[in-house]
Image 1 (cartoon, rainbow over the protein chains, first blue to last red):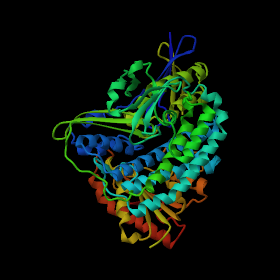
Image 2: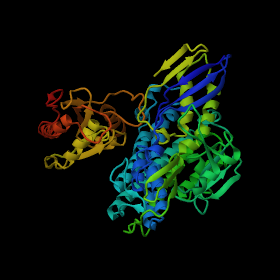
Image 3: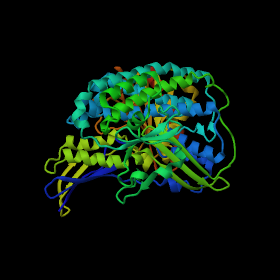
Image 4: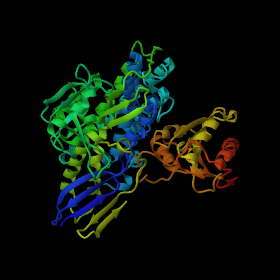
Length: 473
Length: 164
């Protein structure tokens, strides 16, 4: 007879979920599942809506990364209109997408994960939050607030507001960049880069401290996937898909992401609203791969900016070409953020960035469109079919958190097997199970949706359904 | 009228009366009586606002509340909690934001929360009739609070009072 431990809900992630840990009669972990327990159904909601509404509707999927959905949705709409944005329009979309990468990565690293990294997983949960970080290490907290503010401020200056800006539209962007806005953003870049580099130095100084955790925080062989540009470097807005295996061999390269259905399968399990995406050649569930910051720094030849390239070289010297532990998402996320800040500076210094030609106009010229970009958490795919009047008949969204679902489940199993013992329900043990999920920075708002957080609730349920033990926080 | 004053109106404008703070902020931003006052509208309070808060001498938070009856507002002084923000993920309440301002930037301004009682927080992009009718009074109360504070800094003239 088996026993179940339920952690419900998981805290300090974007959305609601729970973890179920299955024990055998001897109290040993036999399995663990990461459940996403909320349902949104955006793929159905948009059926019957006109195509020009799609970016704004899709941005409502998430309050943390609305820009990612704006960009991918607008790119899908570009295909349906059969237009390309003017080069400056594309660069301005890149700019806002990079600001989104910065602010969302900052939220994940500084606000959600740094409490664990600063205080350790055995620390009092009452102080494992940003207020606790502010009291113990004000400089780190100030940098976190500053870096996120940097990204959010750019989004607001470009789009008029921080959440759900409507500036990115089919065909390009809604308005050109003003010289004053460019200069204001440029003036904030140096401090943002300095703050990210201070965080990198702090993280690297404590890297050895986490060797033990890293060995069981989703440490397994898998493939990695991300977009790369023509030179094989990181690309957040465009480019082709590259997939690399655990030994650094390319499973696929130069894939046109519009053909994603040839390579990626989407499995549905009855215990979760989150789809599990898998690499078709390897089948389900063996075709596990990871996306997001760790995948981006692994599959890319280089980041493509000077400071981030130096950091990537050091990352590879320390951890190897294809580090297998999901714990290293944190390190990769900081390099990712540094690169994004550098790219913002580069784009703003482009000779045509103030050009008034930022949008192409057209009516419906195709019945299908696929838009792909890199969101903070990984590769994001929007796929629409419309009728001749541009009314949406069908939509499919492949979200970063879905790409990572199999990997997250495998990671939870690994942590649970190491740390969870049925007779000892302790807070640090439970936090490690949650923390491995936080490495992936899952956005359940995107894959379904929810807002806010609740207290953690753990139940140990015996074979007869009775609650044997319970922890609530 | 006065400098170093910050108004933060926050809430969800897609949940009927929950958005009253945001809508009040929109009106206050265009109110000639508040010349020189910085007004920010937000979906929710986030840590990034700590820098703005630390730079102000007076902060007025404007929010929706289920405590007073619909259309009635409360004015209350806000102080930092001095506690850790247990369970927090990425949004804050006014006392926690004051905590963060103090911890990160060494300054905690005088602060008030002006909260309007709600009739509905269901899905919807319009205020309920009762709260809509009370919105001008809410705006006037914020203006009066700021004027009073400018005349008598440090005095919370409206603290704990109810206004219909």
